[in-house]
Image (cartoon, rainbow, N blue to C red; front, side, top):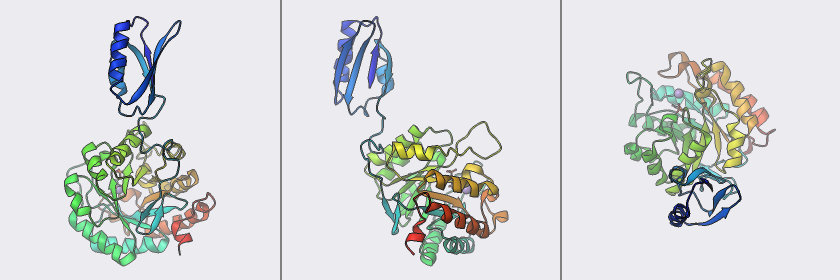
Length: 342
Ligand code: PEP
Ligand code: MN
């Protein structure tokens, strides 16, 4: 961290600032040039709030030269984080595809869809039991019953299950879930993130609607700083001025996140676009960009879906998409997990 001091700063002010900075576990270096006075901070500056430094009377500006996240930072953990999800190696050299409906609606709907996505090559099953809907009058999910149906679908298909938590008070209902999803709207629910940091389950953390990549990484840091290092980051589109798609898929996030962090990166082309015909091209582009996981919404009868009908693929469409995914995933160095572990 570099602190640039005002030309008018007095010796007394600088002394006080150095004393205050001394409380953090860093070494400080004061340099007085002809035109500028600066203080360089060396060491772990993650616990220093840049705004607190900037607020000091004698400070002109502050610049971080190191990221404010530590656990999620590739600089400190050069090797990729690889986690085991129901026997599936996630985050290494394999691609995982999570597929399933937006919401768990009925036992029949979920099991039919689960069997179909498994047959097409999906490696994990998704389905929302607690649904973050924009309208309080829209279907809110089956709650505990939805989780029970997911568990049954796992028994039938062997696919690990991924489902969203909205409130920390429901955590015990997720005891038998393989991956807990934190939705975009909860990316900065810090109480929830801390709670998930104290459990030992993989967390699929979705990027907030208007969150920067640094904010996403700081949210991962919340989970990791409590002890849970099994975090998967998910790009699911961000809100921009473009109304032609539900969100704007930020695909450059994939290689950029790989540079900044060792955590696995997932892409959700369904919520990113909101349009069935765009899901396949964006899924293929995400694989080409190097994602470790895809999360794709598939419904046995999208036209009659209780949520997100416009973006869910039919099992047949998903089957075609999977064929194309498999044909390029090996080429980019991340073959589908199923292809290598038949
Ligand atoms: C979902 O995956 O079910 C979901 C609601 O996605 P997001 O949080 O990305 O909107
Ligand atoms: Mn959905």
